[in-house]
Length: 61
Image 1: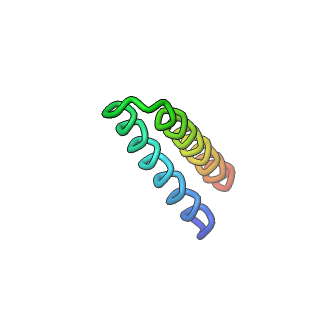
Image 2: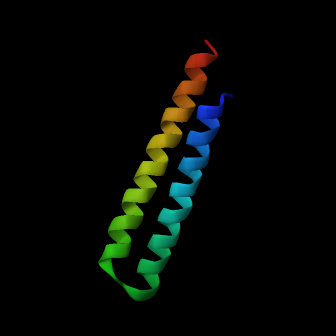
């Protein structure tokens, strides 16, 4: 796996963790802003993981 793919994977994992923490903050204090930011971060993380998986599959053909 190339350096860019590893960087993208690290970014995706960081986005998923940050999103999870934002959603946990929403559950504890109820601020809607945390839910919005958390949902966006999780969506970005899932999108980047999908791109990494597609890139790896495409390179193995």
